[in-house]
Length: 337
Ligand SMILES: [Fe+2]
Image (cartoon, rainbow, N blue to C red):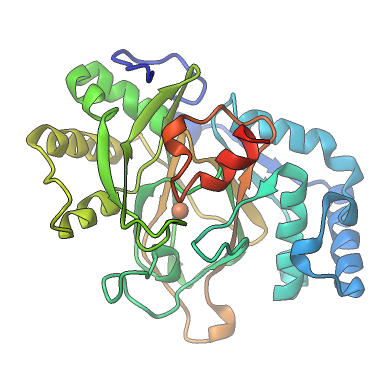
């Protein structure tokens, strides 16, 4: 039975961006020793010619980073829900070496999760030149569009910055728990609506081929409040004739949700620098970015590398996450062993 929450939660994952921007304890710089361990590990894998996805934690030793990663996992689940690693020497590495670095780092934090129907484990986030709306399978990470606040799949994502674009592309993170609390304070009735089912366009990514998935935006389960939301996909699901029309209260709930996220001081906004890796919980933190422009030289285009991970200290997942494209694999990894 799903618990329905109608009052604000006292939770470290509830925070405001204006307060967070005054602190720096969410930024975790690598020290010289850590950078040197990364360089040795990347060099050894590059020289070994091993298949990237066959690399395990043992193939990528980072002996002084155990406490660092423990601290990060504690922030991601049970803490504020996001953290920034700063200082990977990305400019000294080739694209192939940067892929090794991100993948190798991921093996220390959790188990990789496929990010699409094809099961791709490491995505390049950059502008493919294609535009959203031109075909049903295009996804925002393949464009230069602004990306509205949403959540990805897996317990957490890691987004490593190899190169920035010429302009724009600022990162945004928002506490979904704080947004819920604000809605519960103003309109507890709409907080309840957000815990009821919505139809979401699956954009051709569901393992079972279903066009839509039907589930609540917020779920309270096992003492945790989790969000799963891609607002565009709720609206784009309305193109299907057999999908029920959004009701008035659903429209109101979505509008209030959007309004709260746009209020001054709610989002934390920053530029990812080359060598930064942003980690965020998909259960408690929404992320987005502003539109960006690339320089003319293709070698200088904005380039991010993305992992989705199941983490060892992750929360129990509600049963209705079992078949979602975001959590099917994490659900199997966690709930079925
Ligand atoms: Fe995303």
